[in-house]
Image (tube, rainbow, N blue to C red; front, side, top):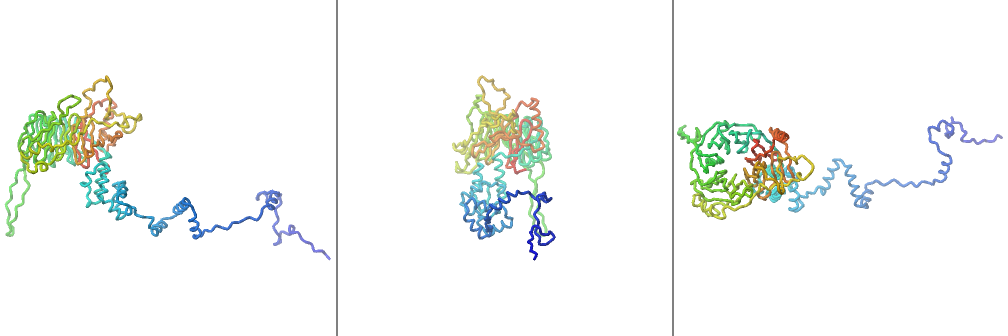
Length: 606
């Protein structure tokens, strides 16, 4: 019998379907396509490797995750939640907002009043309208009067909160009002300028829309405040115009030629030429229907504007019914009648102001007189009694004055500005009569005029930029900027042309006092707090940390460039004094001896 042979599987025909795949020979071409392995290493690894310990796959079910989440540390839980929230889309966030109201709790509704007001005091006024739309608690909190007292107190104007905040008004009106006041208080201002005259400006007036200037060249011009365009050129004075005032349809000017002229606006035609003074007309004040003028001839004159009465038309009969007569506006030129002349000053009168019953005037001897307007009798004399320490004079010339009835403010050539509070007539006399005897008793009372504060123009800030060695955008080395200098021993005396901190002009409102200075500055105080808040000098604003240059946004941007060129050629040797200042809630207008009108507007207003 033939023995059955056992075939080696390695020698099985490759064509057989059950033939196992032959291992490649080391010399086979397949060696190049597969990594080479050492047979000794392979044998040792197969003999030493035990059965692998394969762990079961992690349980990713929601039940397991929620169970394991509670076992994590605080840091791990926070990291886990943050990673999930970063992967959420808007739909997921809306779902969380709907099912978990604790994520959007209204803290304004939950917190006490005091912390709520403190939080809301950091909200910018321009965002108040948006904040009121969040919820009703927000709206009620933002309309709380106590919050607005806090907001006004933050900018030093708490005394104005009751007068300025109107709960019945819209939030936009109240927010815009405090936004502008905040910019005024912090000196966040815009700047415009234009050249008005070739020579210096001696007087300036402003009515909110127009600016009228009087110059040393005898011209008087009326400009549109917003655009700087000239409206009328009033030509006729033979010498410099030292005083101007402005009304709706007329401008009144006083000159060194001793005349007072009334001009029609906007035509610019001459309406009247008033004669009577024998010297320079240094000051004017018009409050319809009275005009008061002061002169270097030591007298004040009171003029009255009277409109000729128009004939009353006869009533007409129509359909048997009498028709009532309708008065028509008077036609023809206005008649100006001199009422009386006031004598009593022993020196040239520099300034005056009046209320319906009391006139106050100041002269260069430092004397302030109170007059009964209707009779012309003197009620009282005020003398600050402070000598000028630089000149050793026994008097301090009064250069500018404003009287509102409740407050008397006047400035002097020594740089002092005196502010008095004035008690009303009924409070001291128990009578509201305006006759001479009652007002004389009121004026002579010791409590009528109480000196409130004395402001000093000579007190200058020491700029931080001046002490720095680096030159920056605030014009640190600009010689035109006021700097506080300490005289050295044996130093020569200052020349007579050195600018002096004289108070040449001033104006007040419900919280500000602004005075133009002989050294080119315009100083702004908050007299409610007694603090100087900033100084204006040409196109710079100094809030105490150094002057900051403001870009000129008007047509007069070349004014500052011309001055820089003159300084570069060594032609700029004199600082021009500020001779006129006027302002309202929207704009500050300043005129100086350089013939330029400068305007400062708070951010947010055009």
